[in-house]
Image 1 (cartoon, rainbow, N blue to C red):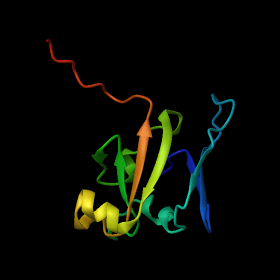
Image 2: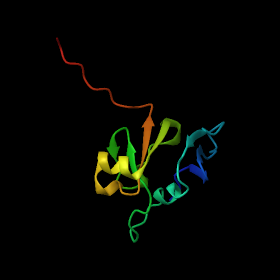
Image 3: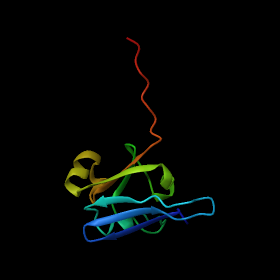
Length: 114
């Protein structure tokens, strides 16, 4: 499956880039500090292997797998949670940490009338 995203990771950094497409003029780079290199494993989707990377959370909703990632052009922020903090927030399913993805198309909560 091609997601149209490239995640380059190394010691202490990661960069998420949208791959160029015929209708695309430029890539969208997003720098993330302190993302472990094994985050790349979390972006794999496999029916035969359990999740080996961090829990993926988009705008507060846990994704079952990377097939449901938002388009790269909608991503405005990434944040890594260390395993201890991730388990405190999301339970044991986040034992390998969590990658919080923020998009620009977040639904807004309806305002209550006063």
